[in-house]
Length: 118
Image 1 (cartoon, rainbow, N blue to C red):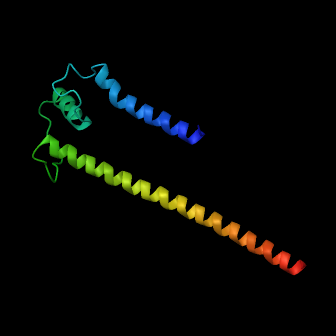
Image 2 (cartoon, one colour):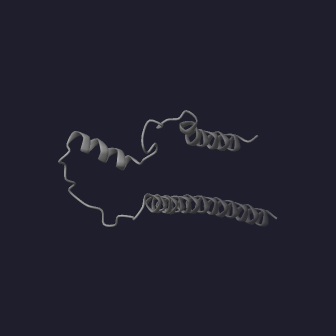
């Protein structure tokens, strides 16, 4: 098995473990919303410490439900992943193109030297 394939499989296994282990061990079972986002956790902590706290800003758009909010977050994450994948793919393609261009130039120089020697 190639080294890159082994690394990719280990990374995939680690991601799967991060997704499954909290469910297997029942982490968050003691909460009303076991896997709420960090924003909700922060809001709860702030109101516990200071019940009269008033936020400085309000959101520009408040989704009608938590499911829509999650869907919008997933779309945002997918777009970000797409932009990163495009950037890294573009860099790799340019690097390969430059390498091929150098190899082609070396072959041309070598062929010209052979032609001059003959």
